[in-house]
Image (cartoon, rainbow, N blue to C red; front, side):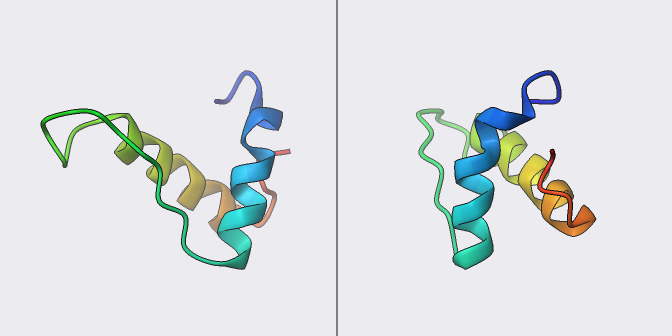
Length: 52
């Protein structure tokens, strides 16, 4: 995500407009890739930079 932040641009744009629900296929709802993605997106949105 940090190496190629441009891949997140469409998701960040959607998140600016409203809630985004990333899918995941892990048994653990609290420890999975969607949680990591959410945290990363929240950081980018808080910075106001969008990761670019």
